[in-house]
Length: 502
Image (cartoon, rainbow, N blue to C red; front, side, top):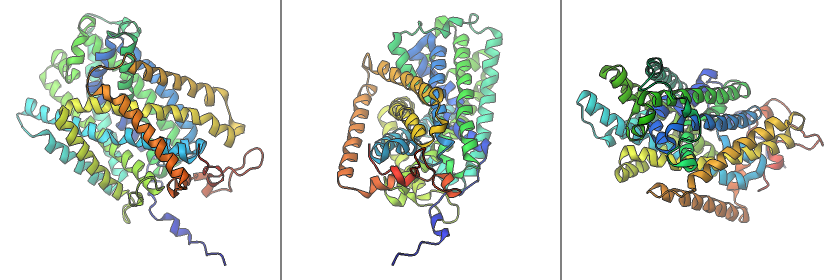
């Protein structure tokens, strides 16, 4: 005799709270994770050190590549919603084995964001408090404080967290924008510099542009983070594509304008000074407005770091939750709080990880250097995942939504995006980096990917339930309508084809 089906309420165990976020909150998630001001205040110096006068040009190229990647994700999110983001989307096209590898690489890229940005918070805030206000607090104490504060807020309410994010983003962009516009209107150090939109002024040639591109990925990192709250967004198939593409276009225009303004402010003959500046906007504020505005810029930078940490941890909590829920990580991590419906076990685990890795990197390299070094590794890691999602899109649409298939949108757009990313990877390792620790990161990443592939093969041969559970993907439309069918009449629901490995 067949076992009776569980009551409908049983499926809600360990589920995230539905329909609590609207379009503004979804876009705030991506904008805050990208953090327009952190990209300008901190990452601009890293990019200028590689691309030099051509930094605005490489920002435009990066915007095109990331925007096309956002188009790929928009095509997925119109049809599938899940807190597992790339990991889930690749699973739809290539099965559980490939999804496992992508999920592990994605997890590596994501989890490093917490340690690197808490180092930035600890190092920069400690430095700012000492220089601007004469207050001396060790960076590691500040790191401990921000990890506990962000974790507590995420435990209580994702909606409240996103409201804070939106307020911080508006404040930081306003302060930085006034300074950057003033620099342009005043003509900067020695007039406008239109040649900065050409690719021929990198001090390290095209290899420098490739290394700079990796840091541009760091600047855009997290644009896809709105997909990690997909299960909590109202009308996700409408709001998520708008949040994805809108956040990339807005921040891409902002980054290009800001990078150009910084170069104009320093002058074409002094671009090398940008790469040696800890916070270029602070120096420019001192020069073009005064020390009081430089202090305001520093406060905006602190606001930006807090905003990005709120978004980073919210996204990571949900990625870890999704992997735990599906069995790729311990099932304990897939639990949600009985009252707040937030992933409280994932919050505890990731907060501990952030402190351990963050403190180790900060002690080894210094907190501000750890930001750039871990950022390089994190950005390099996510590029293969971007490429995997681009490759997955045409297969997914053709086999499941053949009547909607478009060569331009589903083949050409992701192909161009992938070419840009592949070129960036090649240029970032050719010529090979000579300085530590960045010279150990490419082989370290390659070893990690190989280890993930071997693990997937072993799990597959052992018929491990981990890989089977990874194929159990939630289709939002499946809750309201019968299982979809392809043109041949074959069921195309999540259980029909996702069990096969790649």
